[in-house]
Figure (cartoon, rainbow, N blue to C red):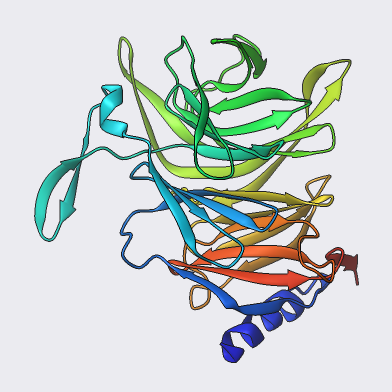
Length: 325
């Protein structure tokens, strides 16, 4: 345990050459949630008031309390939505299974919003369903955020929309501005600015209505600024090529943390300047991150890291200090 804590401290303090990244992460040995029995990928993490929630690609939502106990596992029952199952290899045999290729969560007003397919389910903190919104659109929702009490959803192919009843209103990109080969992966918000994580591949037409997207895939982040109630692209930060979608994107203060591929991690400021970059296959394996504010008795904030199928909790002081050398 102590060795792992030292590794994370070294990782966060010493790896960056261009910038000084000063933070002390205190590993909480009392909070370790092991999910080795879950062979599926975790798509998203959300946390509030010491509780943390995990969305798995097999359609399970884990409700974990502040002591690291799994209080409830809710089954989204993917097979009930009429989607085609995917073929996977399990124990050396090919089987069919319903799996999510996209999905996201957000917490607002003590309610957990879970979005997938064309559905948004709203839970209370105990895992009870408060309501379900089924949108009248063919969608593959990859993320959801509540902005100014309004539900925004990110569709994997079509982009960002605002939910209005059981319909949606386009936000970004504008109609006719869509790009073939674009995949919108994650959605984050800092104050009134929206950040969209994307992956873009070269797309070629192979038939009248058939297209093939091939590598290399460029990953990056769009910054959308609110101009008179309309979100306009202000910046586009490309973060290099990688064909692996690792859906982790979290905001803390005026910074963003994201993971890319199997072992890369970026910290960006609100203007999408790279403040820290880490590539450590020995330390990171498809990491996911989530933050929680001021829930500990001493006022410290929390960083949750899901890594190597373990969910661990780290305490840190008021803010993460990033300063240029």
